[in-house]
Image (cartoon, rainbow, N blue to C red; front, side):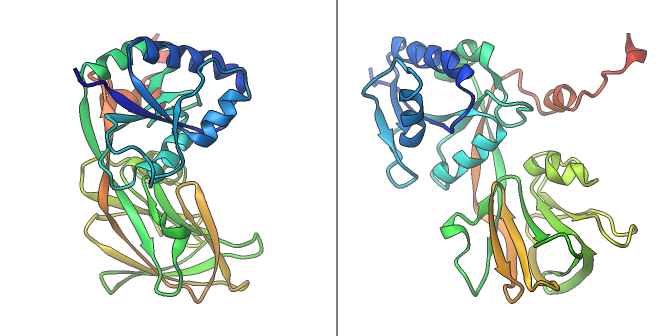
Length: 297
């Protein structure tokens, strides 16, 4: 019987979580699971009295083992977003154990991880494909090739002195000239993140749409707009500082306003592992506290 192999990715976090991580690795070893750990995360664990020694490691997407069954992300949603840079277009499924706070993406709770992993190892799960965005510029290689986002791509003013103007065209037709602090272009996955806090709608994954949400627009009649995932969005930015900030999930760069951006659907998707109880609407109710009202009790 062929041995199951998984990859584990994580980032530095509160050392109080180490006992849970130790327990996880011991459980996997007892199940005869072959483990490959992200090297920076493994170094952090070894410096914090971690018991599992001499495990195989990987550094980035280039040396990520191709024969793994899935990647396990340990942390919060931010760690899951960072793991996307490791997975890229490999098609390797990804699951997340939540050591953070909200846990929209990393939705396996740390006190339920054994039961959840039993289901995953027994292939009792579904794959949910999530669309990504990509951003390009003819003037510059953005984010060293990691120019894709599972949540959102955002342009933002460089400093606090004044708003910026963002000329936005969809498929070469003018959408609007936004006068605002910035503009968020979010996937359905990212519609419950920054975009939601700026008044954007919640979009169900798989709906075939993205949402464009202005950040503190000067004209209050300018509202978020839902657009087809097949659109091509071109942005040109004007600013008194002649600079602006471009973010791609948790990555950001400062760019000159001579940089024009082209944003479209990425040519690959991410395969999220979802267990039977992980219904999308149940997640919304639990994470956004829908129905938690004193009048219901």
